[in-house]
Image (cartoon, rainbow, N blue to C red):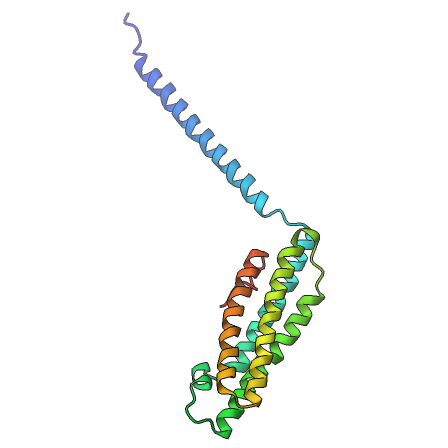
Length: 181
């Protein structure tokens, strides 16, 4: 009687041990991902509520800006050699549209009550949106007075401050407010 070949059994044990090690490593990595993911997504109900409200305000405002300004080209409105009455009125209408949208946006955002953990980031974002509104009002005043340089400067400041507000919204965790799309 010959002894059984145990190499097959040893190969089987090694294969099972390797599978178990790979499985344990995968489970450990999954646990790490879940723990890390839950840590960053552990928002309170109040924080989730604030984010939902702010993002809805931003989405509505962005849609209104697109609708109100689709007929205006900023390049056309700024690069004027000799302003005429029609051009001046287009500038006034464009600046009016921007101010008419940014004013209620700022008011609605200011009415929100951020929870303690979000207060600083949200208030910084809100201040950024206020600056955009001030730029819109400055553009409107310049357009009414047919001050092309001041109008162009106000629109340039609007774009810079709007970009900064997008960054501040991202810092506050406001995904919709941080999107320019």
